Image (cartoon, rainbow, N blue to C red; front, side, top):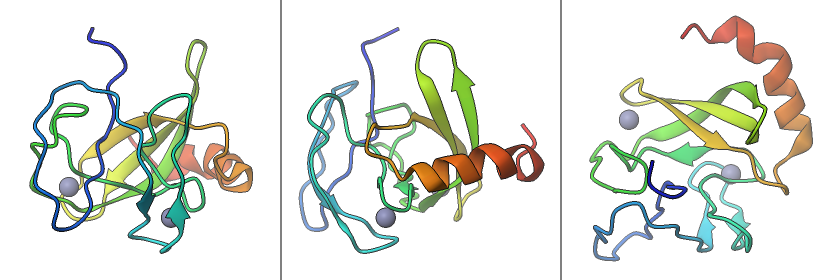
Length: 124
Ligand SMILES: [Zn+2]
Ligand SMILES: [Zn+2]
């Protein structure tokens, strides 16, 4: 496995960056809730800590080759013994399933909600 790979957000108008499997931590404005999200600092920021939404921009983690750019909606939660909370996302546009590790400043209320409702709405 390559080192921790992340979704890579790109701001509108910026040219695409095709670096593979690179940890990218940058601030962005959330497409879903409009909140400005600061850099994470210790790891890569790949979803909004406020509403937990992400964006479908990768075919493989970090590659930004995906042209869908749909809204990745959090639909469930897994608890991994190594990674901790892992949020399961479903793309609203194409239906793809993606997973991302939760960040320490994620909205805990939403994480808890996901852990209690995720099992019912998500069939792997
Ligand atoms: Zn958001
Ligand atoms: Zn998609």
